[in-house]
Image (cartoon, rainbow, N blue to C red; front, side, top):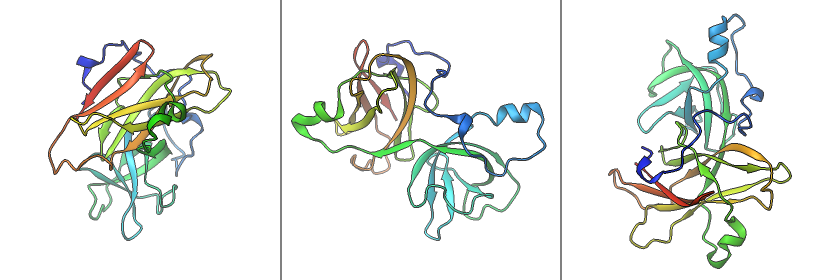
Length: 232
């Protein structure tokens, strides 16, 4: 869970219109032709954040949380090939066999988000390569640590002239191996308007928790100084 005690910056409660996830342009998978207005409205927005995985027999499934798996009945293979990615999805449960999975579902649409491993430590070159440009971490339902990933909704200034570079680094705290740092390199593109982005980082380089729940500490440079937050 997001720990608000260390998170003092008041965040916006609604999605910025310039959010980078272009939901309006995502591809549709077998959309039903006859839908009422409520259905059409509900299908515009994601109702889950998942990890897209492929089983040993090449069956594609969605990991909804640490215990729940979804079997898409209208998707025979992953649209992302062999890559395991985090994705926003709009789905509905269906009354069909789900085999070893928790629930069978129909996918209305799915859109991957930037999914990366923890970046290598470059020592003295960390600032040069990974940047020190500020961001705000948005307290939102998609800002979460689950299924071996830390997914973050972040907000910064976008001028649109260059692609920004975001990464997660291992912390340098010898007393806390579960400390990580979010880095942002805007490459000088720091004049413009506020916009949001989503990124997910695989946490497999952290020590095995051996089944225990531990606190993951995230540090980042905000527009008002250094900040941190904790996740379970």
